[in-house]
Length: 274
Image (cartoon, rainbow, N blue to C red; front, side):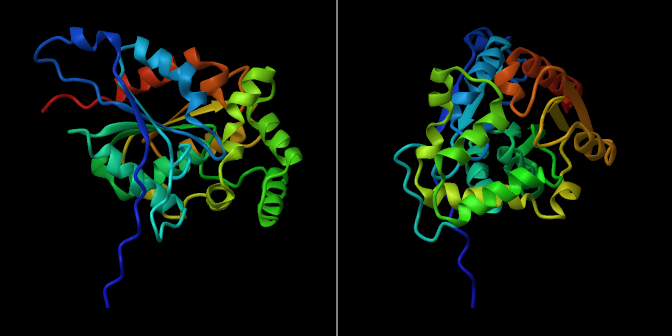
């Protein structure tokens, strides 16, 4: 008996073109769009500083809300929130472009990016991981979060600890903005949180053939610089940029430095025209 294929969620995508797009030189190959994948309990709002930098640099940006994360989303019947189902849902977005795309994933979004690149290599020009490598997370944070998820809701204390670990210091206005995803249904937050804590399947990193950049904040308390260095050292396809004065969310804390690292990486890894 044939098994039904896993359900794929239709994702909300904010597609933005740079102002320079109208001035593209005729006959010159266009640059692939950049797909931005957010982390657990996060909203696409935290990509705004980096998106502005990339658009100013002439890049097209597609800001993707992962399954259930766009307000008002209804997941399809039978959908189970896993890194694999999220990656397949993003693949349905990436295929809209005629050529492979750049994928940038933060935290859990990085796990989705790697899973996508392993399962659908033909869709991915490069992978960039921000605040993430496939390594055991901070044990204290993992235990705290898994315990809270087991209760079936996210309490205020857990929310505050997460925001502190992710962003260190925020204004009241930014904390309200970036914390909005905690208001999503637990049917989304719970399974996606467990997927984030479980991390990618063991065989995924070895299946990724796309050039991979790791952008690590030197002060990241959830993924250490040592973990990032060990991951990058295991393959010549991987490169590390360590960013001083940043923690888990380099794209928010230092978006210009993040954009410069990405641009240099894409230029270096660009395939010559056939």
